[in-house]
Length: 290
Length: 92
Image 1 (tube, chains in turn blue, brown):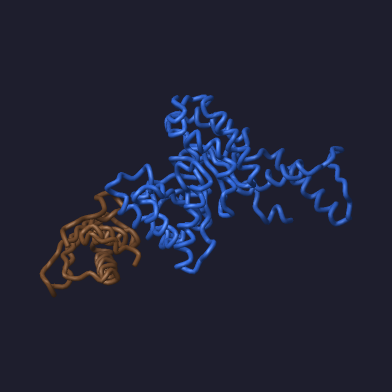
Image 2 (cartoon, rainbow over the protein chains, first blue to last red):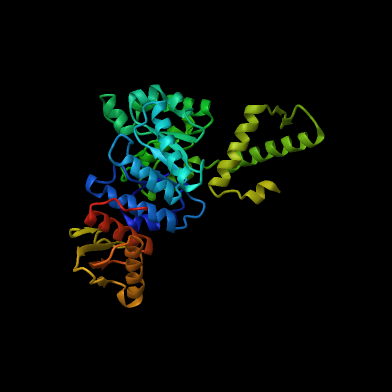
């Protein structure tokens, strides 16, 4: 998910060139109070006019408790946004309040149910309530950690090794998995430390995160490289999925590949590996379907 | 209505200044663009169309364009008019 300031037309129109999985146009922290109105109109018209292809379009709105939040929701829902990212989510009620605002606009527009929600968790209370937040609405597609505010709330600061974030990351992952939605990690702000960035991506991948928020196109390649499965892993996954299909056709209950039993977790992991290979551009859907 | 502006002088953006003009004077657009000889008419057309949609006339527009897309022109005109009128007429 690539962050783009919502008041920068040049970046907004070029962002798709870098082919991120999703683009998040920001109306919150990246925009000064004097420019909130102009950014809102810019994001609305960009959503309506620019064809971003298959890239998921996300907008981070201002909190509903601010003077801008409700106007932001109206602007981006009427612009046709895919996902609204809610900042500083602390309780399930925050999600419900956002959903109610979305429903109001969607009802007027005749597109009820179109907009999905992602919640950024950026405080200790939000981390404690992660599962309630993740399950607060059927529109929820993911929860994300916002580490800067969270670290400040913890009364510490961010470190390169990220020890201060470990509990929040694990709790967010567990909550997302239990809710059946995605978990997205926080941004890494030091663009000159690509080694540190690569290490962090490797850690969050191992923890189970589905992806990483990024602030510069230079970071996309590293995320894709770390998340992409190896050829060996892909070949193994393809063999497992093929064996499952064959077993289904023959009506067999128990499957073995290379002498090892394929149970449900193995099957799920194999399918995830193939999904990642497709997302990383290593495999095409046609190759998988063959 | 008061004089107000929106947009920046950055590449890909357009700076729009809206000023009130005499009653029944219509719309006057003064455009300065890096791509004026190629797209000047199209830029003016988008500005006029946006003002018409917002039901705004009797204004003078100063526009300084750095290669903005139509959607950016539309957004900047809308934001400048909202600021000039003091009303959130956006999206209506």
